Amino acid sequence: MQSTWEWKNNEGMQYLTLPAWQARGVNLYFSSRHGGVSKHPYEALNLSLKVGDQEDNVLTNRIALIDAIGGDLRNVVCCEQVYEHQVAVVDKTDRGRGAIQLTDVIPGCDAMITNTPGVILMGLFADNLPIYFFDPFKRVIGLAHFGYNGKYGQITWETAKKMTQVFRCNYWDIEVFIGPGLCKSCNLISEDKAHHLKDAYPLLNDFICKTDKGFSWDMISTNRRMLEIQGINPEKISSCNFCTSCGDNHFFSKARDGITGRMAAVISLDR
Image (tube, rainbow, N blue to C red; front, side):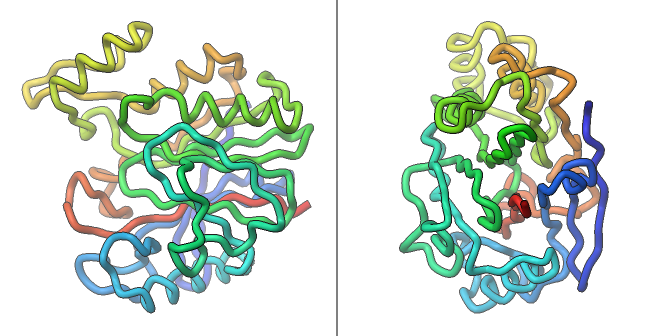
């Protein structure tokens, strides 16, 4: 069963959500760039404390977004997002980490999983892919930050594996939603990166193509293939296929704009 995303607008906040997951008690959101107070080049709903925006504006934006989706910033948890493959297991004792300051963010991780209702997992994105996970039987959720590095294939793989190890999830039961990021046409990589990816992961060669602008990389198809190899049911992998760079300026895009803000990927269990 593939899940269909929808745009929602509440209290001036515009965001994507998955009604099929919400109906089963999972609150999943991906913010747009609209509705906040940040100034150029972070206009307007920048949610990252790491890009040079004024801290007060970022916190105002975070409070506004979390209020609009019915949450509490004190329950938000953020990880460092360092392009590694470590997965943090989060519970109620982690609430608030990284929510209002960077000093207490969960370090060294690019993904988080939890089975604790009310804990809000949040990641920050502008072109890399947010990968959401949900096991409806074990009531476990996860959120991963996927982008290029030497271990690029592992964070998605490791997140699902951690769910099976810690919470005894079954791969075949896990549902995955791949949020907005660079499409294959906009995701141009260097020749060195292209050759590295092809050499390290020959099964994914068909997702890296030479174009007249260089090499392009299809990250969505890469993740689909990796998840299917791992044992995730292909019918339970969905994506919104909305490009952050060429998608009608709904989103921040570092590839397009250089210095810019970040959207938030958010997921929590309400029961």
